[in-house]
Image (cartoon, rainbow, N blue to C red; front, side, top):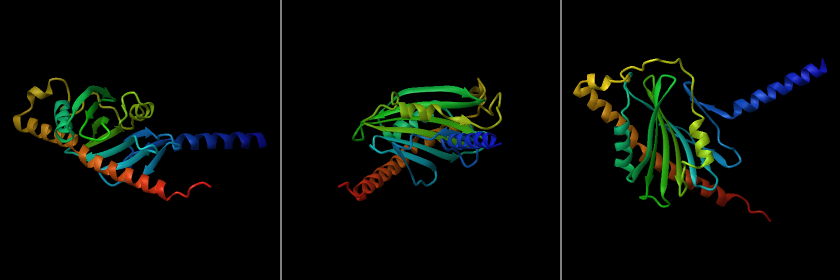
Length: 222
């Protein structure tokens, strides 16, 4: 009996530790793996940002934002790219699209030398049931495309909703059937979603300042 209880307790501890390593959105739609707590600090956030993790060396920020959009509105990859470069400058290094559980997932990496140190940011962008989820890895003087923490964070995205074989208005060839007004709205929304990067970078700046102040206030070791 004692052995059985000991085994049960071990299983509970294992489950608890696994759960602690996963962050899930408040609506339960997506989840990601929590970064290494020994090298990342979770900081306060305000909408549209849901959560921020900043590396203690201030070179990498991992962030998730959630933005409401009209129901059944698809996103256009080229317009998202225009929004990103229009606000942040620089150039698109890589841009791909894939279907994930019936939803279109965009992965876009942008490089901008308008910042010091140079900024390289990769984003996962996906629209699900009238909401856009943006996973962002921002590297300051660091290439997030090859950084193991950034790669692990972005690739850990899980979707916890029923699969749709054909998302509304996103099936192949649907663009040709769209009216001009529908297409203009899709472009407008997609560009705006790309351009909110500046706001998020301002938040990153505040996070960095908080980290520096926290380090300064830490008691020095004798």
